[in-house]
Structure formats: structure tokens, C-alpha cells
Length: 250
View 1 (cartoon, rainbow, N blue to C red):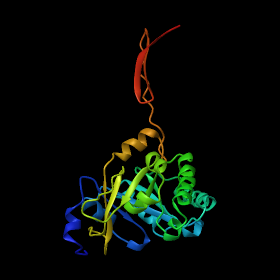
View 2 (view 1 turned 30 degrees about the vertical axis):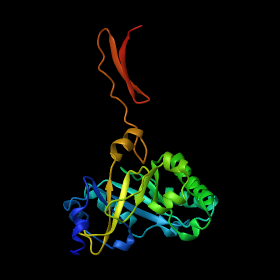
View 3 (view 1 turned 120 degrees about the horizontal axis):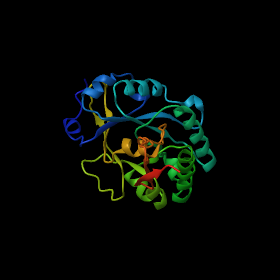
View 4 (view 1 turned 90 degrees about the horizontal axis):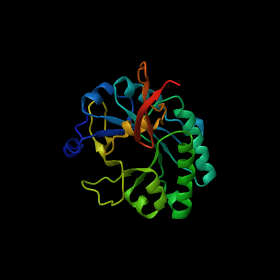
């Protein structure tokens, strides 16, 4: 196993996870699980063509699931316009169709040429993708560096969508809200040769996502109450609040 940085192995937080792609090669998901990794974000691909699907996405998805590791996914962007972002969203949807994700699916925007367009245009690109994915029934978020989130991402995006913060420091000074923090690119994990990105999660995304019935999950309904001679007691949930009562026979 790659020795890695001792500090990176110690600093994992309460909910450690990794994010991986074809660049991490083939590895042993069972060993990853035994090393304490509790969830993983998988690169599904990049760009706007179906041929740009990550070559290890299917293998990583099945391997993580078989090891009992909950997963999310992300799509790396090269879009230079809103139309191109929608094309990227459509191919992303085609790649993840039929799969279930316990963690959000993210849009990864980090190309310099995109930020050179300016905050207004790059934010429009982000919105085009995020809105498309959300409308298709997914819990979608944005991946970005502390710098890009501060200077090139509109406030409405950061307030409407969950953020996956990339800031490779011991203690981030980013003041915005975020659900996952990618704190290192030089982590060491059993089962993976070489460095791997390490992240810490701060939200119970599996409960949130399954409760909303998104990311390939159906919304869980309350089971029917048993009937009695006098009628039936029912319980329903509306806007997160539970109501119960008895329906009598007509």
C-alpha cells in the first residue's frame, strides 16, 4: 500500500470518503471498505459526448455497491455556454440512468477558460446543468474550489444547491455552507495504489435522498394501518409533518 502522508490518514473526520476516477486505476473495494471509508463519489465522465464516460465508472459503481459503500457521482465540465452545459447534463443523465445514488450527483466546474468568461456567464452555465439534472429527479450539487465558489459562483446557486468544497488545507477558511469538504489530494487508503482524494461529509445524505425519493429511489410511503371493526386509523406525512386519525365506515 502506498505509504502516503500520515497526516492525511489521521485527518478523516467522522464520515470519511474518497472520490475516484479512471486515474486511480483498478483497486480493491473490499479493502477500501475495511480501511474505514464510508462513502465514495465516482466520476461518471466529462464533456458532452457519450464516449467521454469514465472508463472505470461501471466497475467502480458495481465494486462500491458490492462492498456496501454508498456512492454519489460527478460530471467534469468543459462547457462554454448554457447550451453546452445542457448537453453535458443530458449525457450525464444517460450514463447514470437506472442506478441509485445515496449521495448527491455533482457538477464539477474548474476549467480556467470557463472562469475567464466571468462570474455571470459561468454561473449561467452552472445553472443550466444543475436545473436540468434536478428536473430529472436527482439531488444535485456543485463541486468547486474555495476561490471559485467565492469569486465566480452566484449566491443563488450556493443557496439552492449543496456544495462540495475543494480546499486542500488543514483548516478551511471558506465561510459559505457546504455538505462535503475535499481536504486532500494526497490521501492513502488500503486497496488503492497511489494518492487518492480524501473528503469529509457533514450531512446525512442517504436519509435525505431516500426520504425525498430522488437519485433512483422511490419515495417511501407510510405502510397502511390494520383495519378494525370500527374503521381504519391512517397516518400521512405532509410537508414533513405527520397527521393521523381514524376513518369510519360509511
